[in-house]
Length: 114
Image (cartoon, rainbow, N blue to C red; front, top):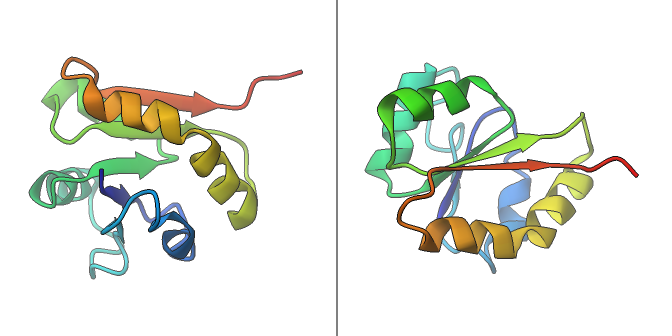
């Protein structure tokens, strides 16, 4: 599984994800910083990547356009890169289930209170 990180996430996350998600990329690194949501969606589709974002607008886009790409929506408060990286790594099994489920299109990951 390859990820495409939306520009609302840091490029610095890529280094810590390559062992689990080889070939993952970032929108800005691909020269698409500031691109429209539809362009980012198309880019993820073209690159056969799962889009990872904190932008809820992509959930609606997924409902409207369908997969591919699949979408991981990080419904989390502002956090450091280290915390986001740890969160993504901790949820690797859930991302793998998303990739393996032909009917699944969106995975919402959020912190539970408690």
